[in-house]
Length: 232
Length: 210
Image (cartoon, rainbow over all chains, first blue to last red; front, side):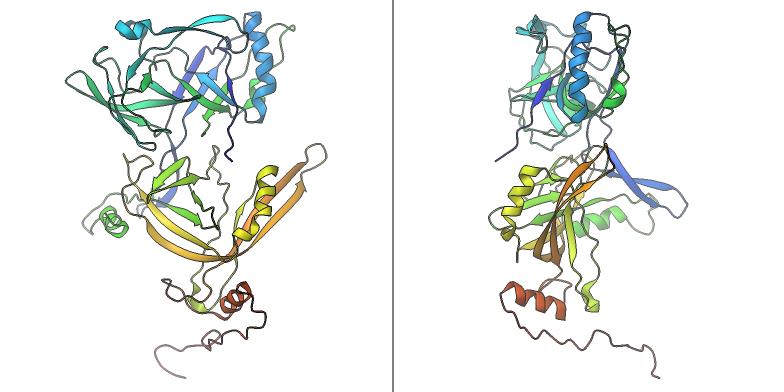
């Protein structure tokens, strides 16, 4: 009997003003060299992390969503958090053709207000096994727009995974071999979607610092939130 | 490549002057009857040796699988080692407690895995045998900790294992009186007279007599 974790959707209206996604893994203390230098012993794999800094939430909708989050974040609840638009994502101007038309209609999971989501993607070109750090994607439609430092993602069932591109090499401008961090959490097959506006499954590491009182009962300025990848 | 040859390659020769960095972690194979469990000291799922190993390191860097440090068994001692999952939820705790007979007499094998840069969680180097212990029993502990206002109910599950119960074919292990008695008890023999080694407790003089 497997335990299936409940995934909550992070309300899109609770958007940060500053954010960063990083996947620098972990290391343990190594040893001391004869010269007296401490070395680090790298741990294989590791978890992705993300930080949000918020400005005062202006809309009633986002404050109500924050009230829900205030009671949800503290006990290790797993959220599917979107990577909000920043320099870490492939810029909109570089996404054109079919990818520019990948819209679909859905509803905001918290407020049930109808929204139109934009989910541009490029296809994965070959199988990659779970646990691997290299995969290939077909970027022939967009050209060489994906660069080291960008964040991309995959979805498997209801689970979203985000990865940072550590290095990328193009084969004649179409097939890109990408080294990602953290390692793939699920296997990929040719034709799967590599999302350019990804989400990640994360828990809030410092939930008690995020929740602040509502100023005059109306607006909250949430404290900085640190997310750590939830391994599902 | 075998573990030894890869490790020798990483260590280099006496003419090399770089930092030696070998990422080696332990993997634990609990061979419970009909339900083997494989864990490793890392984050995420490791794919090695043809199996999936579940990582026990959590986000803050702590390891929720407490393993005992193994001593050299050649001095005749056969200590009882404990391997613990210190925080288990109620459903799994009750299920494990009901199934505790699946552990008795089964093998706990520990391996080393060597991961290289660029392999992610799929190392290509063969795993290396570290130790094989026989699980002799289990312990389940429920306790309340903390102070008024912040009480915690903690459940932990422990497996007790000994390095060998007399099978000297396992590399590095020897016969001991304690392990013989434990093995006899596992097989249901209540009055085994044990095994007299005559070697433990003796004093040896090296390099000249008294």
